[in-house]
Image 1 (cartoon, helix red, strand yellow):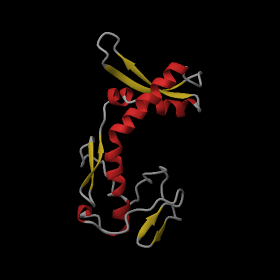
Image 2 (tube, helix red, strand yellow):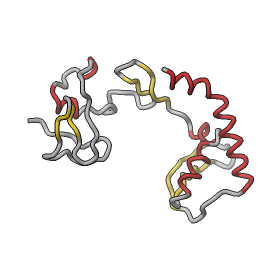
Image 3 (spheres, one colour):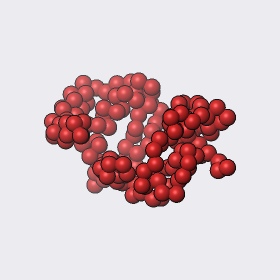
Image 4 (cartoon, rainbow, N blue to C red):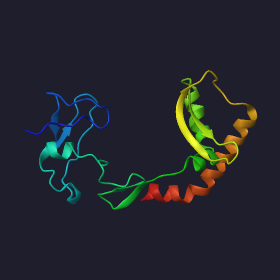
Length: 157
């Protein structure tokens, strides 16, 4: 019998309590379920264990664009850190993370303005000043206005 891979959601190893529910293997720790049906892209992954062990990004897919194999729709397109910052999304995420004393820190080259790296960090402050807040809300509002049609299309699809 093939060994089960770790659960892709909680990271635990499905144990003796992992059960088959409606043709799916269910993780006994978090309740995640493996694929129920066999699709063409699952070639060679026969049986419930084979379907559970499928991992989408084991070198088979381009890391910047992941296609949903069941619908042939592009599901992920990589954005740049510059876009994330310019649209106010880094500010928005950091507003949430500050609740936990954390933030995503981006290092930017002062001369060129080029992105160097980003990393999560423990921080002591818990809020932004009034100017940063106003600027952040303005950027996020403009971003939402620019993508609202696309978001609506995705929801209706």
